[in-house]
Amino acid sequence: MACGYIHFWFVLAIYFNNIIPNASGVRKTIFYFLKPSYWSGKEGNKVEEGSICSCFGSVPPVEHLTPDDQDVLEEETLVKKQAMDVTIVPNIAVQIHGHAKMYPGTTKLGCCKCTKTSPFHAVKVIIHSSCVCSKAISCLTRINQVTGGDALIYGDSIRSSVGMSNIRKMIGVCPQSDILWDALSSEEHLNLFDSIKGLPPASIKPIAEKLLADVKLTGTAKIRAGSYCGGMKRRLSVGIALIGNAKLVFLDELTTGMDPITRRHVWDIIQESKKGRAIILTTHSMEEADILGDRIGIMAKGRLRCIGTSIRLKSRFVTGFITTVSFLENKNNGAGTSPEPLKRFFKKHLKVEPIEEKKAFMTFVISHDKEKLLAGFFEELQYRESEFGISDIQLGLATLEEVFLNIARWAELESPTAEGTVVTLELESGILVEIPVGARFVGIPGTENAENRRGMMVEVYWQQDGSGLMCISGDSTEMRIPQNVSCYMNHHHKC
Image (tube, rainbow, N blue to C red; front, side, top):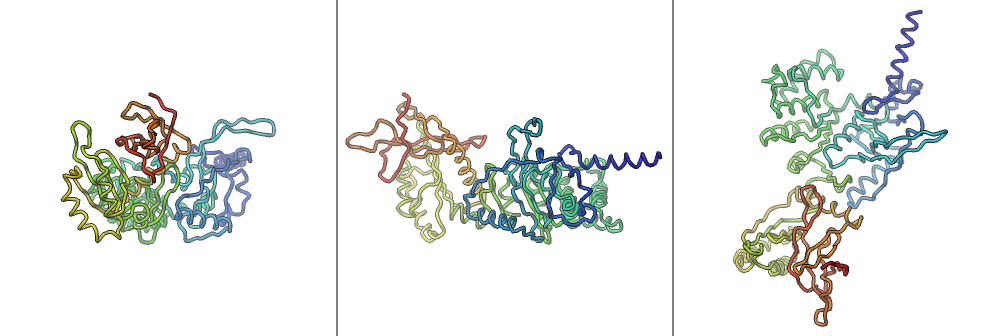
């Protein structure tokens, strides 16, 4: 009788341990044991609802925004088509279908109904913020519970307990913070994780030795990890992520805080580990993305803005050569010479306009088809340096960082424009004019007359402040409004 009670309570404890959410909200359905897939280990691509009732399981629809970029739109259309056709492609590493994580507000239960306060959408696919990127990876690996959509990893659903059992056997994760024990050596770490991964005991030692050699830690294999420097700890974390020939590896902010030499060392390890596996790398380093990324996606304001190879992104978002012309400084008024003659010079010879204009410098993008003109052009420009008030001329190829900054700048202008956000511009005459964020040409109220029917205007220069918000960096001198320029005019102003 006592054995029967013990057996009953033991089974009940296992059952409640499976259906009660853990600290991260991960749980199984209340009838998980009735599903044949739970016992057979098959049908890992079928989604399981992780809520006790529809009240808790309902997820408000995520607002859909049509991508502006053609490549992103094609990617989204392909994934949607596969989802509608219930097409499972086992050779694709990751497919994301409306993946979302929500942190709900307080829930009020009533008789036969329930209501919720507005939830906060923290993750929609993968976000540009490093903190939320970590949350997204946690959801894809089911450390945290997914509350909307689904993701397939090599054909298995992350919302299926059977699917996750299959997924965990073929993925590796290097989190943003190293999960290591100071008292264990690198060799002991690898032996431990080899065992957790379920590798045969006979193969654990040779696999650990090979990984130590791959990450160049053989000489310190017996030394405790607590005495390692940051770069050595990061290499050990990469080695742990590669255990068991993982087909998919997540690397979260891999080289943050590393010195240049150690960073290059880790890059070499990743390059050597690419063969036969898919690697998803999150980073804020454009140099790192350019070197390691076979396919790069840039996100801003929670949305995927572009996707493609480094060459394609550079050709689409920054075309050609980047030329920066700096002006001599006037001690009294900043830049000493009007930039208009220089702009006309570029316009006449290369037919280009500045993409960025400040009092101290101007930046132009010159397309590759004008390459043959550059030698004569810059020879003349250098000859006329004093006429234009030029202190320095720089010419270089477009970088991925330029692509990122352009996309971030465009994204930053979206919210204020949509919300109608305005800022105050103070003109030289003392007039205060409210203008929308991002307005380039601003008309000056009350300057229209019989000789100049269109009036006067100033060109406003914008930049991003330390928090990433757009702010006014300066404005030009007052000038007549050209016929081909459309400018913002606000007749409500303050003196």
